[in-house]
Image (spheres, rainbow, N blue to C red):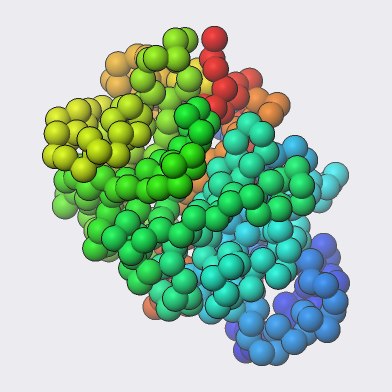
Length: 415
């Protein structure tokens, strides 16, 4: 491996990561710069809890691990762990799902532990995790892992959804591989998901594929999946080109962010799935009752019920709903986070946080059990752009920020 400059810390991070801080940027945890969010964790580069120093050395020398090529894509919280998805967008990324355990007074460059194990992160085996973009954790501690990034040649395995039991060392409870007509082995991009626990369990998934964007529905009880395609799930031309942190975002990326309204007071009432294209301003919604009806989704009648919600002021990636109906989403082009309560007119949306230094691509949201809302900022566009030079230095590249709301996530009732 030939890093931009020699630094022993780049090579011995397995042993010295807590002490190896490059001198060209202050990496102390920065407190909140305005009312709202503050940095909870941050990384200048990603490293792992290798089994042995020899394993680490071998991975570096053989370029199985290239530190600057590893990126964070999704974040979720359960008990005392922070779970992180690491999509394989460049070579030298040995792990695609991991966790960190919070440590007192240690907030920078925490080592990530592969989850459920190193063996489950091995590439080129369709029985392991290949390329994870995001995940969701239900109230029973089951992680629904979306192994569906198929936009490069790092794997020929079909996209799949894997259910892991977090209360039993990540035991695989179920795995479902999507057929090519649902999400393509080459070109598919299962991006984000929400989970509905009723009816045996449903996952609603965004496929951001450039060729075949849409919403994928998976029924755990039926062991089946189906896909909905509509013009509202494609990119909007007027939102196609924008710039974040000096990098031009060029292209037409369709449906990306997704959120689910909390359980209603009465079981027979509908819940709404909200979605938006990355290259788009509009937010749309569709009833879960329609999405769960496979036969109806195979007609063209369901499109009549797609509801236009409103227009955002910028493009967005991740979204999240809490149990009070508050929808939070990032605004990529303005380095901001917005909040809207779905029981109020969309005109009441508020921009609750803005920071051009820390909110570089707010990409994934999560909530813990104590009322905190988190957002991962990752500048992920730099990893997608293969012409962009990634370097090892002291610049903060990944941040997890938090704010206290006192609420729970959308799986819990707000009553």
